[in-house]
Each structure stands twice: as structure tokens, then as C-alpha cells.
Amino acid sequence: MGNTKSSFPPLQNVVSCQTEKFMGTWFVIAVKPTMFEKTCSNAVEKYTFLKDTSKHDIDIDFTYNAKEPMTSAVKSLPQKGWVQGDDKSNSGLWKVSPLWPIKMPYHIIELGDNYEYCCIGYPNREYAWIMARKPVMDEGLYNDLTKKLVEKHQYSLDGFRKVPQKWTKAEREKREISVDDLPDKFLVAE
Image 1 (cartoon, rainbow, N blue to C red):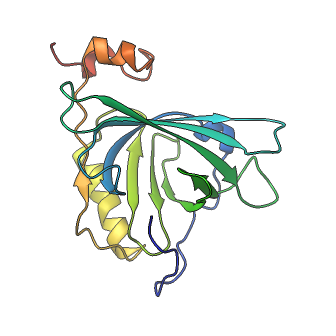
Image 2: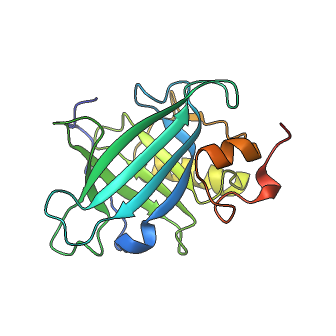
């Protein structure tokens, strides 16, 4: 899933990321994709902080449609996360395991003041994610984040793609996404 060795300078993680505040539902707005994400749509990650566990710190439930939203099967890729550093409650660097025994670096490199958006980076710049708490993002904010990926974090946007987010009420219910996380105003007709 990509070599972590890099000729790039180290990624600049956010100074502060409160682990519990980061938890919850994130919609993948755009991605420099892994092999699982090249054609995905309706990609969602749900994070749950596990207190008092020695095995791992975070459960990540990654679900997506393999291709076109509303017409392709829902896939699931459960993952485990480990917060790096001495303070598990506040760190912008994690390790994430999509498949055992792989543990990939997970750098939180951009984060909204209210945790409404984030960018996740990878040391060799092969992968990146722009995520938001809602399935749409203001185009100005999206452009600012892609500009930061290029100028601040030395990313190329070659291969970068927006992830289609088209939701119906039935799909929201099937995926157990709350109305708070996916309000009716974001739904399309079935």
C-alpha cells in the first residue's frame, strides 16, 4: 500500500488534534486514492475512540460504494488506529491498519477550527484525503485545501479525484448514518 520512504520533507502535522473531538462521522470529499478508492463513491469513515484498551486506540469503520452511488454494492473496510505520542488525547499523528499486519502513517495535516474538515496526508505523498462532517464542501474551501496540499505539503494533484456523494434516505438508513450527520437537505430523490 505504498512505501513510506520519502525524499520529501516530513509532513507538518497539526499542532493540536483532540482525539475525542475528531471522533464521529467524516465524509470523504476528495482523495489521492489507495487501491480501494479509485472508483469509490459515498465514502464515509466513522471513528470511535476506545478508552482503556491496550490493543488499539480507535476503531474506524470505512464504508463506500464500489462504483457509482446508489447502484453499486456497499463495501466495508474496518480499520484500527493507534494514536502516536505520549498524550493519546491530543495528537495529529496516528498509525492506521487497513489490513493486518500493515500499519500506515496517518498524518492529520489540516484541521478546521471546529473540526468541520480535515486533510490526511501520507509521507511519500502517494495518498491524501480531504474529509468533512457533511457530504458537501464549499468550493472555495476545497480550493484552499488543495492549494495547501500543493504549496504547504508538496503534493502533486495528479490522480486526485473528488468522491461522488449522492445519498438517498434508504442509503442513509442502510449505512446507519444519523440525520444530524446527513440532514435531509443533502439527500437526492430515490
